[in-house]
Length: 466
Image (cartoon, rainbow, N blue to C red; front, side):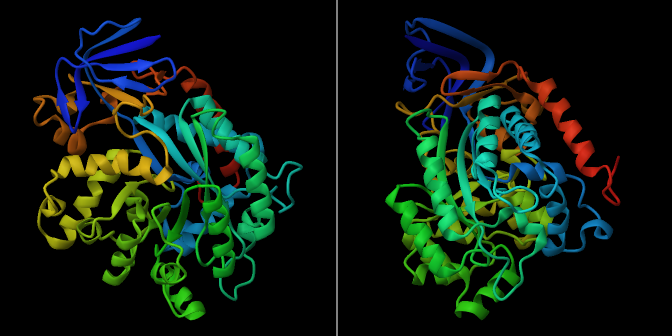
């Protein structure tokens, strides 16, 4: 059985073309992009729409959707990343398992409505609020996975190792729910791997996420990375997000996080360095030589005042850049994509900085960051409409006000730099529509349940809205 999706325009080999369709098998895989009049068992006409590969969100903390708008005051959350964490800890400490599910559903629903078909969930809520393990130590991981399944989005659950609060620091009570020993982490990860094997569903994958060098000492990091590589799992890690993080690593090891990981032989094609803002030219070369990916999160990084990611230097070195929504300050994949260049424009006081790199057009380069590069970082067959890939795609309304006046030749640039999310009409994962004509069947239920959780968590929080 095959299904032929027939839009007005189809994204083929980096361009939007007419008179082509997407042929999908009953296994949810793309067969081909034939002429639009090709015979098929089922035909789905998509008049007035363009069809493009779904976005891949490489870095998400779904529970942090709860703190959107709650930390935009120095009186509440202080002046920097380190004080902002207090607001995040407030939310983390109050979520019961059902609420973890409800909040994750809300984050994933918003992603789906924005055209995201795969999320890499960097998950570090493990224990009960008092720090005691649940009877099933993977209960909260499974709640997040269940939320993704309910919404219909593909998930790569990047289970996070968090062993300490920092070099020579006492345990921060705000991090109580994050902590496990290395042995506990590996045992729980192994159990999860056996209970949720990739072969059961192409919409669930697993990966390993040592949180950061401040949270995972080097010897433990080596052990975790070796375990992950023996299982052929992707490895994601926060690196060089903050200057203070680099300084603490220098005090402990005499090297910054990227240089330390390189010296230890840990970097590789399966490694994604999240943020990597405060890195040197030498460290860029290390990441490039290793074939690693950088997961940039521009909307969160600007919200937290982390700094400006040197996308020009990184891309010039040939490093693949993927994108993530991180703290959910904003869930808009193309906003993250365009900010890679916009932030540099402010720094250099020039326009289209990334257009100078190689022979790939700027819009195409940024669209790849939101799609194919993220799929590579998460080791999923997505982010493209090539034969054999999962049929993950979205459609957009060619009459949407934000892209009025387009032609097939300039449409991709209009999409990357100017589209409104209202233009996105349909979203499919593995060939199954999870959003149809702008609607998700569980939208009202998910929002209502989220509103209940939000009210409970913030009811007594000083300075929060009621």
